Image 1 (tube, rainbow, N blue to C red):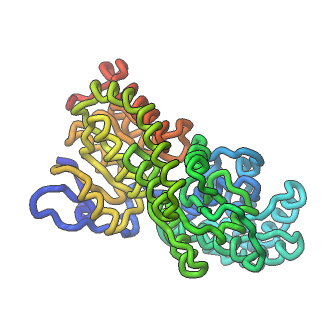
Image 2: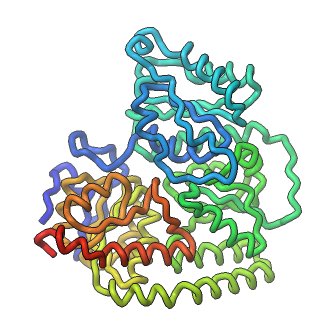
Image 3: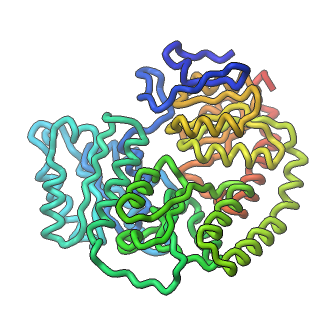
Length: 449
């Protein structure tokens, strides 16, 4: 059985008779080398895909290097987000303060790149030395006549989920600045897609589905988004929350302030993407929209399902482990793996809450290990114990899989293959199939296989 630190045992749940609720939303245990990212990273990955904004990191250069291009977020136009800017604080700046350096950097960069808005990210050192980032941003905004928004994302003050909240606060301030502006839209069926970051062009695929249904997407928060779109998104009739971990606080705020209802969906796997489209159609309760949705879902499933059944023949009975950032994504992955005949033996997340883990218990099979905020020692131990053939996770999980000699499927920030939507399910099935069935594993497989 895998080694688990005594202080972590309540954050590991084995689905057996009499299993207790899992403990979650705790700060990572010091010394356990958690797979989590910091607050700053959480805020950066949410705001980064806004393609016509300036993203300036106020702190040492290492923070900018750590988060540069960590999402494969594509843009259909400007690509200012692909450049990582930093104030590059040194020891001298730490002693005397970095406000002058921040102001100078903002002034020069705004003049040079003419962004529609600027986001300034506070890192750990800023929280320690006490730079008044808000005042500097306010001054720059007044002089340059664009929104300059501080993002209070000092890494030490919480976990990745707190970074999501800091990013959502900044987005809300941006959309609320122009609350008196009128917005005219002929289409009565308007939505925002929240928590989709256009990894490998997935937002474009989802937007195309809604377009075929007769639904207008005002903006995606934040995949391939623009500052002017975000300012208008408070006029939508419905918010569609794809990544609940990153965007739920903003969805709740928009419901409270603007009266916009929201629904939680997932675009991963045949079941969930179909359900996501039908939920939107049923919300607007329009016969034409519903008929178009039915035709879309029917034609897409007929197109991809025969090929998925071919992959299933080879994958039937194989075992997988899933460890992702948000727990909502894990639900879909369990269903998608079941579609191709595989059993999920281990599943966990970095930011899940009690509601998430309750749902995970319902969709997981007997004997499954559910884990919150794991670390490499635990995860590798669980993989060995459960004899899995593939690990599905993010950039920090890849080395664990390869060192153990098993397959890996990237389902996180920097991937280049679209895994959302109907085509994404087909891509996912092929990637799992080609990985698990690769002949290379006969040279690397661990002794448990």
